[in-house]
Length: 90
Image (cartoon, rainbow, N blue to C red; front, side, top):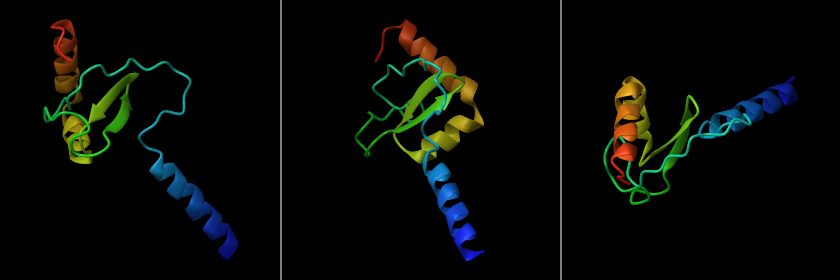
């Protein structure tokens, strides 16, 4: 019984650690900006960027706190990405 609990706990930990990647074979629309869409900080200045998938769009953030802010109003930030790409800003 203890062994089964350890196996389940390990599987759950592995799943939780893999939240920033997609397991599907779908082709993500790449994130082309060099800054965090939420904070405006240059990606990589605060460590390795946090990468997520939102409805097939790759999104890169400077930190986990920005992911939380994005999740509150995702369309606001998706519109910001689209506008920046149209304007040719990186």
